[in-house]
Image 1 (tube, rainbow, N blue to C red):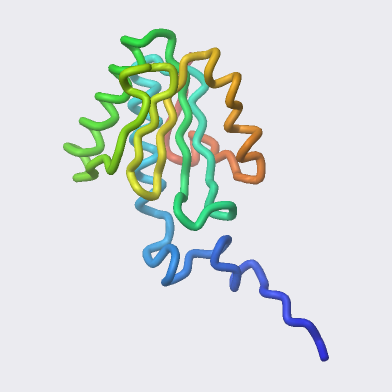
Image 2 (image 1 turned 180 degrees about the horizontal axis):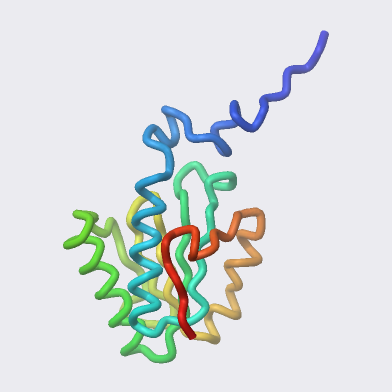
Length: 147
């Protein structure tokens, strides 16, 4: 008897499926792009978008950004909320860490935004923890960075 191994197109963790991602990841990419753009506009550093579809049935994308101060992290989180709600009709499902302001997590369902101070980002190193994810170049999301 031959063992049947699913191809990537059959693997629901890799390919969008009706059960896990009934509408694909197009909307998630738009949300992540807006969040990344707002973080950059508010002087967020090291902005990264990671596709975690292959590792998570719950989340599609992570957006990571570093801020220099509590005030800046608050401003970035508030501006992301404002832009997503007013510009796309997306309301945040949850928020964690706002009071402590070392790691603020904004949950938009399929997209999770992580805003860190430098020390906390380095300590938790989500890029390594989610190393099997795929970093999406910001240019693919229509974002041109200027330094």
